[in-house]
Length: 291
Picture 1 (cartoon, rainbow, N blue to C red):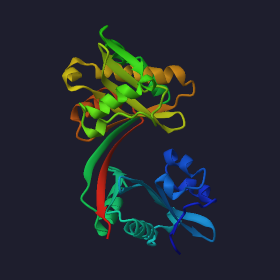
Picture 2: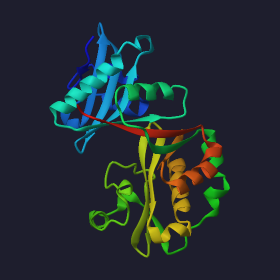
Picture 3: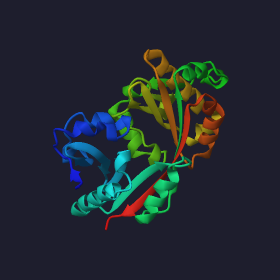
Picture 4: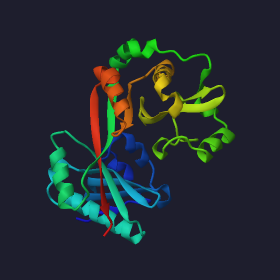
């Protein structure tokens, strides 16, 4: 069997079941190399049995998903997919691959053994994620933290979609945030991405993205340093959640994400979100040099 790059392949939709739900829509139409996505598949007599989907950005490749059908595991297919990706990276002068995986699960030690055998780096703590869904969201809306904290009059919430090009350029040109909290001017969820102004100045934001149908990813919550100890992040987050619930009658839930090093936010998630959570995940990041 051979692993093949699936650029401009009309039948790529057949591989949707071999990746995570949040990426399946990316396979609705053929993928071009210009899309910055790298699809690699293996089929047996036309039947998809293994698939790797990766993203190319800033001359680095990050693997979104790697899946082999259960019947065909332990036959070297995952290694074949990675070898094909490595060759693609080498041909395009890309030096680094990366991959994230969930830790503290029954299968985690198998993933770690596989990565170690293929000379990937030691795992680095990456993300902490909390998933709240269905009726638990309704219960959370009634919780104390969602309703206790109010913003003083000088602080004003606004839809992030209303930020002007001039305001956004000022944020980019004079950053008061570290790169991982860089705001976005596009590709955000307009439903409930919010900004926060103090006397007209933008001092924070809660930016969200569509994760999968009716589930929103809360991924970029930031408040300017001098206002962080004033408790402005919680009402900003609460307002964003309420917007989602108000405008989405088919609400299924949300995923709250923060970096592993953000200990205050992790404590908040464990204290206020975890009691309503369907699932809590911790991920690690690994790297590999292209050889």
